[in-house]
Image (tube, rainbow, N blue to C red; front, side, top):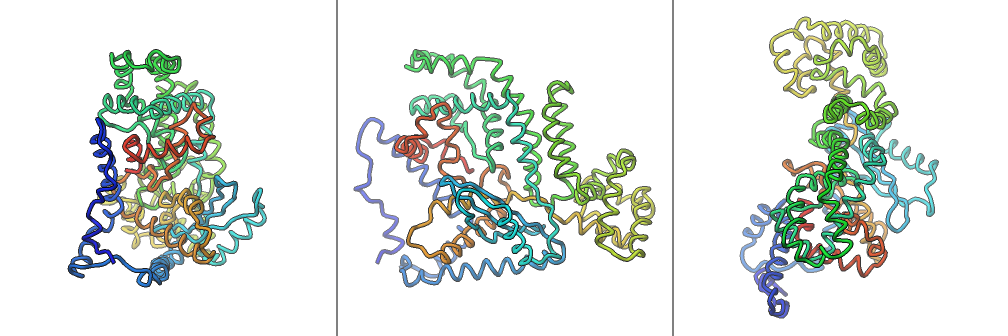
Length: 535
């Protein structure tokens, strides 16, 4: 039986053979191993040290008998945390997050989760009939989920409309071609070990490629990464080191030299960034942990304004982008809950009061929501009266503290200040503003990773329990990382940035040995830059 002390002793048989570059390779691989180890233990490092020291010296590695029952205990713990959230499902409402995903193996999966203002809870992943998915079958599964949660608790307002906007914009011809060229550039660099080393030298060891929570956030992040390093990349391609390299004399090297020194290419990259980035920033804010219902409509309006500003208000540039945004807004955002939440958010309302009051759809949306929440006419009349106080700065709405906190305090806290003056309206506002409409805490790619790694010997129930525990623990772990970028993937698949590694070389992607070789380089010293993708 091995102890923790013996596990820390290095195995001399695993040392790297001597040679001119052996030490550099070994150091690089060791640094990467240490970084990954730190990532794995940092979330519970203090607890691990405390528990280990309490046991004293001689703590041994757990046996199979000791491990037996661990999954069951974890299952009880996760169920306990979900039970704690259920009271918020009942008091504040919740949304069903339903994702239909086509895996690499051609299987359709329906992933179900519940989102409320206090967190996301993963429920289950269901394999759909092979070949294609039956919409009627999916509807029955979602209906059963709603019954499980409680129909009266479900206020369905979750939407993936922002990612759909990014996808629509990504199909604009100029942007689509620019993404393809940018991918081919990173693929060319990462496919050559020495060229990758040269690039790191000129970029001060900075990464070119990052992984976002969705495909088009990844595109936006990588276009921004390349654009910010354009001067350094240009410097590399006109350097003597490049001129003396074999790539400068090859056709493919000359092609990328012309691409990098081309002002037109970087102009197009900036066009794509300016089209994507304001929407990605909305996603980033939506993932900050605050209830998003009161913000999403207003943030999208601000994003449109920002896009127009970036294009110097030239309609020929920003209107094609606006067209795709407006299409999704009209399809998903022009609903009573979203419009009422915008109306009730003081930071948006008092900035745009005249425009909002002159547009009847916002007030009508609030009336519709209030009528559904309160059936008695007496309460509805009180809300109408209290709305006049809200819109005219009367009584407590006109006091100094109400003015000073409109822009600084989140809308939920602001309305809690007015519970005495406008009890019914405040209750309506709090119920609506506490809703969430999509969360970045839950990444559907996690489910696909787990399905791909499913052992053939495991029982279905055991696998489902394991997935339930794993995904919910990842959700909890991600929610505790307050300072991370919310649009970066929390845990990415090893092959997730693959298109940005092989972009112009599709024949390499078709050969599993080449794919495995490239990903092995990413995980080792050759790909140390890519190994930092989830930071």
